Length: 155
Image (tube, rainbow, N blue to C red; front, side):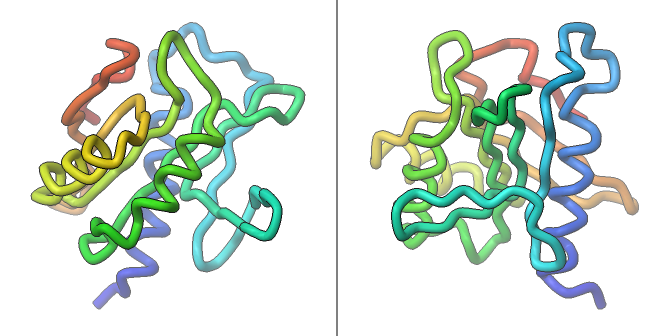
């Protein structure tokens, strides 16, 4: 049996590899960096004062400024306990067209709870996604994408 930590590591790395950029994305700037953080390796740590954040996926501009932050959650982590972390990650994210580029990926079935927590706590986000493993493949489904239509894709 694969541990929750290992599952989350794999999910985060697959999302980073398949959505940053999408396989057919023509407007991806090759100078943008993409980093993953998990229990085995931390590639990009964000320190703000005494706080230290290791979001699941981080994309940066060429100069190192934060572009996109994604948090991949396990079933037990979709809770009120995550609100302060989600808010901080949203605040640290860059802005695309109108919203902070903060994406959250939650296990299928947890999307209503995650959306409620985000909205009740006024956390700005560019997309809420579900993830599930089906027949050995990772399936990502968009729940809501309030910023850019091109980000609203099933993979």
